[in-house]
Image (tube, rainbow over all chains, first blue to last red):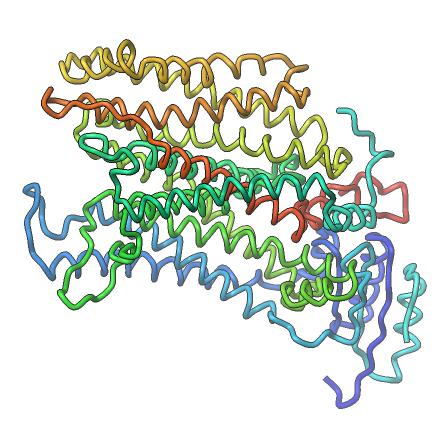
Length: 170
Length: 448
């Protein structure tokens, strides 16, 4: 990112105009974008997610889930060994009933890890409102914020406007 | 389908209508709160009395040590299942009709599990020792017996509560952000804190969507496991009428059946009083009616299987237990259950009945009565008539445990009533997702 950048924000009322602006911006080589939508939109996602790996949240889930399975078996087997009492003629470390505990902990740890992943990756909680955010973006407007060098500002404005933005600022 | 695209609300309408549900409540709402609060107070007083007097106050004596408390525990856990089914399983199946009801159903799940969670505490008598259930390094090196289904239950229920709560709160974040931006003053500030600064930026959405799908994928096997584990509390024991491999699917199906009835009990007044007919259409009611019908028919099949295997096993105790259930002291409860769970949902074969709120409401109430009695019929008559005449016994409810059980309904409803006035009970984001996206170029409309 260059030392000085400016941000141009386009506010759109429609999905198709937003997508048109994004396609145009990407074609012209603007990749430093922030897109605000009231709902996740497939068309917008298709443009922005092109050539990007999927979110790493799933890695958190996997690691959390496996940790859960391991700790479920460890807890049950280890604690059963602490007091090696044979009941019902079954082995002290009897695996089938422990599967239940391991399963529950897989889900529990997997879920908590997913939450941690989501919060970390999505940058939550966010204490300061980003300057380009607008209250309408959680209602019915779509926002495209383009970070660019100051001299490119007119051309970005031009792209946003010709795509059909209701409002372009600054 | 009576909803033409022309009549469908816009994005801004959704925000406005959901905000409308959060307006200061009227007298009717406050009146209901007072009634529910009064019943809850009675329940709390009854519990206090029981703690003071001991478990005898609740009519607990051998062999009827489980009676109404475990009946209600299983009942409430079951209620929760429909919420997770709607929010997780139908999400994975991309069933679009779920969008306008899933938030209320999810809230119902959490409140139902919170209600269910009270019963082991109430039933334990000295509930301040409840932490004995948790595995922790205590000074005598004693650990829970992980071979006991009751310990599995602790893990299953607490995992279920945790995961449902996470799922619910994560689902709320973008909606609370929408409420933050739509409201003003102190409300907006509170929502701002609860929304964690959500802005709906693409970087947030891409992780959010992935995480949401993963939560749904985790919750799906979980919900099926929870009631299976609860059923093993019974099925792992040797008591005639309990010791059956049928129990896990039988319980899960019954749970979904009763849960949908409770969803309807909550949704129908919500739709009426909040004027949400634009979002909760007749086809949603129709879909839920169908699910109640299907799960009811499956349940009927399980009842037949249960009776048939008891008889066909040739086991004298199984047969005696069945005979006693069907004809003796608690036969009225069994036949009431058969009527409510097998006969009453049959009216939903009629399409008109499935679209009529009154019929659905009546059927739902009957189903809830039937499902409460199903658990009663599993627990009380089975324990009352096992292998040995010396251990047989009749349970009679007392005023104290009956008040506590009624109080639990008040606790559930007070949580739900509170929820619908402070949080968006209709998912802003998911409802918008089902609407046609705003397009400038009309030729592309309907592409989504």
